[in-house]
Length: 140
Image 1 (tube, helix red, strand yellow):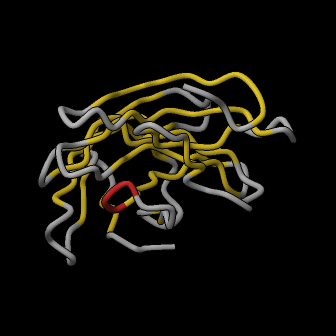
Image 2 (tube, rainbow, N blue to C red):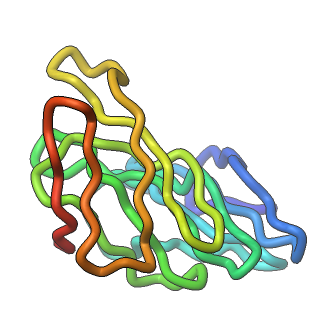
């Protein structure tokens, strides 16, 4: 499969053979990748860590990145190389994606998953609720 400079881990594959996961770069930073014959760094040139956890049938990928010391849900449209962080300042990780929803977990102050979420990514005014907090979509 290849790598971006170090060890690679595949996390998911769709019916079209598109694989997503992460690989360590030559600088020792984990970066999300997509692979379908050739490995592509989804966050090339970025200094933060990122991991693609899941891919859907359309090639959209979801996962997370670490920025400012926190986890951020990250979404790559159509397996593209321009990822975006979702939910602003919320500490969260995406773990799955289908044609409409991204699912994941909120990360608490101890670094543990404490509440799951489901976000309708087709609704640009969407928010998700953990039971005690509501997070409104904001793209970083």
